[in-house]
Length: 172
Image 1 (cartoon, helix red, strand yellow):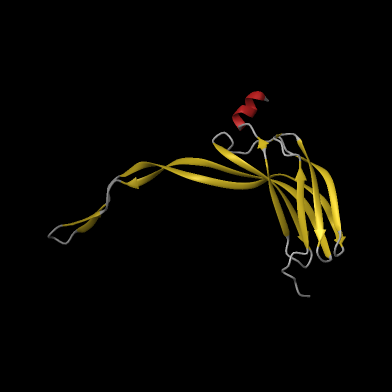
Image 2: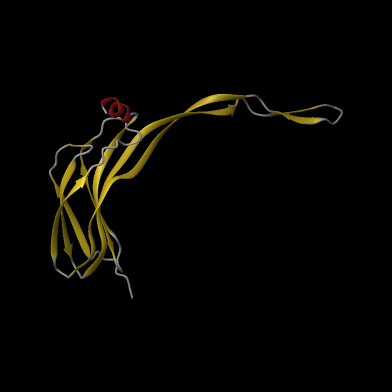
């Protein structure tokens, strides 16, 4: 059976636009609009965190280029200079799903129908792993796993305040 590359379903996310803390719940409304009939195998809402942080580490590099040396008696070799430590700094960027909730399974939407679902997404109380050394951005992302069609992803920025792991340990 042919697969259509046109989106059969669109998703729209609404919620109160305010800062949310770890351990809180976000009241979410998802509006699904079907342009044509579609079978939804699974619909879930992910809270996606993208961290940006600097990573420092040390590598050993040669203190100079290798040089050839030789003698008139035919003994040749290569002098390799000693290795010296060098500090390397890299900007890293990691994205991961922090919290997730399945809100619909095995559903069928007929062409032209609109379905609105309301539910709570609980934000886990675990801070991102690099929160003490970097910054993070957060999104709510609806992922629709559709049968015989391309999956649909819709995301919207959300403000989540996450204290660093060190601070969380001191408070806890």
